[in-house]
Length: 118
Image (tube, rainbow, N blue to C red; front, side, top):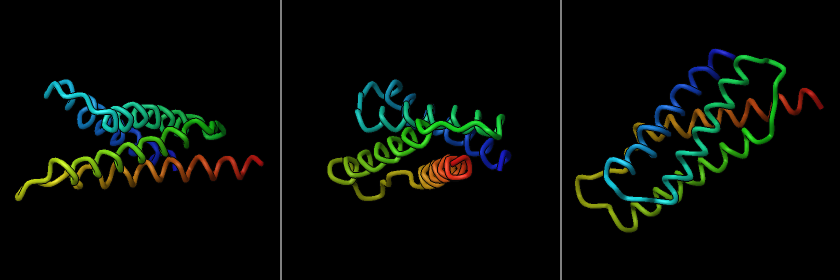
């Protein structure tokens, strides 16, 4: 599980910073859902790295950060499909699918550690 959490931390951190946060800075457009997904994803990435480094470490804020990141992705997708969808354009699920899957893995690992420790 530490290797999976390390890989998850790398991918989550990369997509959160480059996809959600840097994209807003580059295009000069602030978006609350993208900011939520970016900052919460960054916190989830830090939690994944910490859980990979310390097998006995657990913190409920990692799961809540992951849930907040998934909510941000969902809100951003709804906004995109309601207002910005044009023919030939897509939301970018090729990056956001693995982002959401690895966040779900981190949430699952956090939950398993909490259940194991009682």
